[in-house]
Length: 172
Image (cartoon, rainbow, N blue to C red; front, side, top):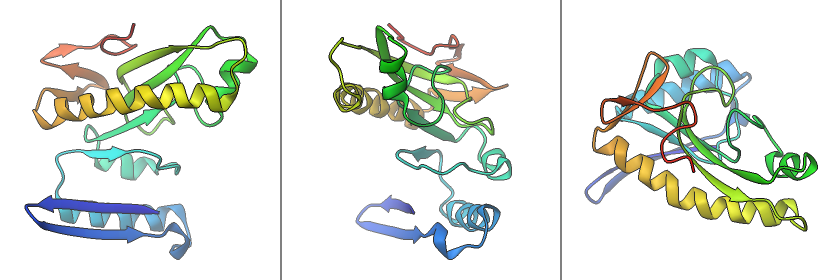
């Protein structure tokens, strides 16, 4: 499901789109695209949206779509990132906020936050630690976006007219 809203003072438009009501990914994405276009957003925030979007959808909103992913991209794209970090004996794990491009979890990284992986960690322990960082960095990125400081140009993240490194801003 996807919930769309646009705050205009005390007036909100809400539309929930159920992907089960569509016979294909393409049909759902076209309906979602139409709803989003009707809102004319400055940017689109994905959080917990566990669907792969079609390239046509992503390209329509190129430079406006941001996502948060529980790994230090480009490491561990897709699912089960916390368990992968534990299984591989990683000493650190983390979270990335990135622009969305047609490549799964492949868009330019805007910012990352790192957390330690402890010897006795479970995937749940690690997820809790990562989610704490998610709650810190996603609002920061959104504030940059809303202030007009952040954009994507030529598949690069740009903050305050400066190209960010591949690992994003403040990646330590």
